[in-house]
Image 1: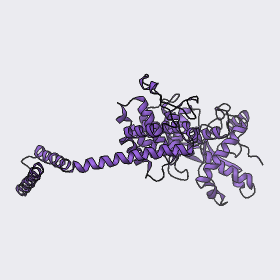
Image 2 (image 1 turned 60 degrees about the horizontal axis):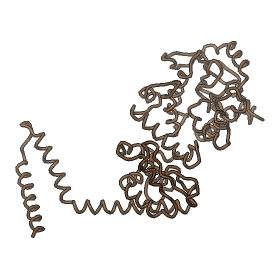
Image 3 (image 1 turned 180 degrees about the vertical axis):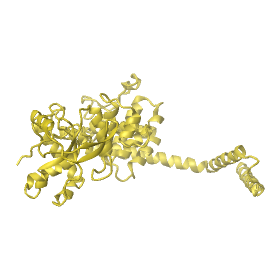
Image 4 (image 1 turned 60 degrees about the vertical axis):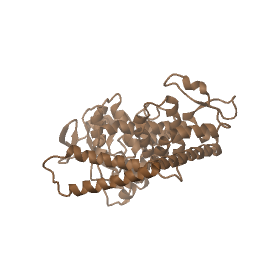
Length: 434
């Protein structure tokens, strides 16, 4: 039997206008800046509509649209569509299973102990997953789960979407049966909060989404945009499940941006391409956070080796090197110069073929390992100098910060010891000159 996911709008609103609250029952809520107790009502389980702009399902909706080739505005064009709400129900069902709500409420002795929160128009502002679990159980066995035939709700006064976003973020980030958010979903929520029509400050968004630092709001949005760029170049737009375990790779890329200010746009694009290639197949080289740092530290050598070793597969158009900042690209061709050009940032196994893409990665890692070996050799060669430099800094701090309140006990002995060690260094230098 098909689950009914909400009454028609006019029936729903009329019912909510005429319904009377349960006598003596209320629930505390903070809404529109006020902490208050609101009356509780009991409504048929099939009356409420899901909130399609639900923060939890934003990433799932985008992925669903991509996988099922739905219209881009499928979840926003008609908020009263039964087909859309049934699709939303299926997405929410995935979340209820992952959060363990199905198992929790399958126990028929477990009943509703907290009201859903719905708008005066009958959309669920808080409790979408719980409602989904109850509907599934009641639909499967109306007799066993008769206690879910009607559900308790709080009905919010007239409000705008910004009020709902605040309520949603505040309530749904609490730690109980609601469970954790994926990093991409939280980032999508943050981006939504600071963008029109909400235009919240980064400070307000950080407070709403329990982000520790205000500066982390933009950082998380930037991570998401790198992730979306990665998905786009792999022709898996909006497939957020594919980057669920890759947050720290994109975080590293964002953290390195400040060190790329002097780079040309084409160099930045090459770095992005090679970082994305690492993300495709990180196995065998440690965690991605460290891998991308190794790439950054050896970027020039990596670019040189890739362009040199892969010239049979890719053609580098040098005309682009002089193009205007922001439009700079390096054209690659697969299958000869007559083929359509592919920019660095679009290059992946799908365009090159898996075997050639693996060759690119191997070339990158050969360059990185060579660069790391040179760095280690250089550090060894300058070992004495580096240690003396560190010692100089420490002694300079002692000199700069010393005052009459500090103890002089043992200082003379240390000075004498250091002086003796410096004499040994001088002898070592003289032996090297002879």
